[in-house]
Each structure stands twice: as C-alpha cells, then as structure tokens.
Image (cartoon, rainbow, N blue to C red):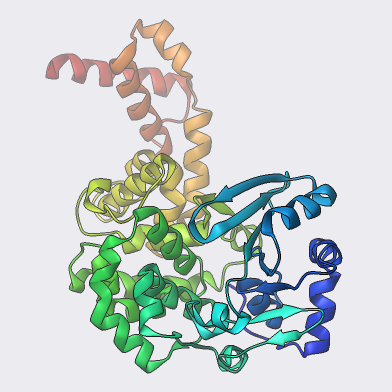
Length: 407
C-alpha cells in the first residue's frame, strides 16, 4: 500500500495527467467537446500515484467520441446499458470508461460515493471540486456524500474501509454511523463485488486496523459468519504477524507483494488465511459472501491443515501435509527459524536416497502401498534415521512388514 506522502499543486497535477500518453491522446481528440477526467484517477493523481482507474465524462455524443479516440488507440469497444457507459479495452489490459454527462458536472459529481471521488479535471477548467474532496483527501478522511448515495449501492459500505486503508486514514463519524445502521444491506451485494473490496483491504499494510473497524460496525460479521470472539483473535494475529513481516529482507519481502490469485498478493493471502480461521476444517461453503478461486481454496485448505497440525505433529508431517502452503504456516506461526528445515525437507522429498522407481522395482509394489512406503521412507531420511541406501532398504522391509501385519 502507498500511504499519502505528497499532495500535488494544480500545476503539477496538470503536468502529471497530461504526461500520461493515453490522457494526452484522449484530451487531444476531445476538441470541440467538454471532456472531464473524474473519480479515482484524479484522486490518486493528487496523491502522486498512478491509477489504473480511467473514467471520463463527455458532454457530446458518447458513441461518436469513443469511435474517434479508438482510431488512435485501436481497442475493443463494449457498450453497457446501465449508466449508458462505454468501455474501451486495449490489448495491454488498460481500460477506459466513458459516459455521457447528464445535467451539470456538479450534479454528476454529487451522485458519487465519497467526497474524495467527487473530483474532476480538464485542461480547460482545471480542478473541479464542488464537494471539498481535495480537503478530505489531504486530511485522509473518507466522507460519504449523502445517505441516499450510500444506500443506492450498498457496496459503498465496504468501500469506505477500503479507501480508509489505502489512505491510512479515517472514516468520517457521521458516515460511519450510517454504515452501522444500514450494514445489513450488504447482504444484497454479489460475492464477487464484496470479495474484490475485501481483497483490496487485505492487500494493504494495516488491514487489521480497518477490518477491526468493520467488525465494530457489524460489517465484517455480515460478510464472514465467524464468531466475534474468533474474528477479534484472528485480527490480533494479523496485526502481530504484520509487525514481523516488516522485518523481512530480500527476496521474501519482495515476494509478499507478488500477485497470487484474484488480484490478491501473497501478503494479502496470509491475511486471508488467518482471517478465515475458525478452528475447524476449511469449508468454502461456510463463506458464501467470499468468492474463492480453486487455487485459493486449495491454498487456504492446506494452510489451515498445517496450522492445526503444527503443535502436535512432527515437522516432516506438517511440511508433507501442507505442501506449497508450508511457508505460509511458518510465517503465520512465527517460525521462520525453521526455514532451513523446510528447504532440507524439499531436498529430501525431491532427491531421496532411494527413488520411487527403485522402491517399486525392488519391492514390486504399486499404488497406495508405494505412496505409503515413499512417505515413511522420506520421513526416516528427514529425521536422519536413514543415511545410506542400505539403511533405506532395511527400513522399507520393516515398513512393508508392518503394513502386511496391519492388513
């Protein structure tokens, strides 16, 4: 997360916006028409941050304007009925949302969610800020524009905490009181939209602070059916872990910011694994408001298995059962001192003293029995009770004898 560290003057804002190739092209092609850059891009540009959000409103014919700029940008045009929005997709993944201005610019801005998003800019008019969003942005305050605006799209209740986390700021008192009163409206929102906002919070540097706020306002419990006691305990673990993560060095620290799945970073993934912990087997059906990819489900399932086993199982069994989530478990349990042991486990598992093929050929076993023997043999090697291939063969004979006796 990038915390507000600078605030641009209007002249610097103009230079930043027009320095962007795409903004330069689109404003150049708008000759004869009033065109404004609005919302998230202006908000982030004022903070000195490049934003992926590019929303424009135009006073003229939207279709003809998009066709004109597409001659220069060569993208794909998609029309949406809702809000009369036209989206232009470029091959590099950048998108532009362009809609027609209905009424005055001030009326359009007044229908948005928060003051910090009700700011517009154009080369002709400069900064247009009828709701004092710039002041709130500078003070890192998330303030709703009206009760009606919040209720018109209840996802805005969750977005309030997301913007507060991005700014490392606060939600204005009256806005937060409104959220407390109407929090049940979140139940009407699709899991996909809620998940996107939740993941943005989890990707931030201090998610525990803002998730705790959401918990106090009954928002988090509406999303996650976990007891308040457990959620508070989980948030405490997240806060403690983040203090440790700040001390990571080199490749491990850089790796935390890489994307894992669904736009969630590895750091966000660690937060999610802790947040969804409820002292039981991880079952995605228990969390209908969180849309999880299959990749995410597998990772969380394995991490929770390792978290359950960590205190009562051997290190080998924890590593073996958690697979790619083993590193997550070490971080969550604050046992990065065992990292070299995990690396040794990987080496033993991948390059055992005796290979699976050799075991199969020597002892004429296949399938489940072969898998059992391989795991027990690797465990003996990891725990340094197998040093040579002769040791391995002797151990395997004992393993097979025990298996035959048990069956």
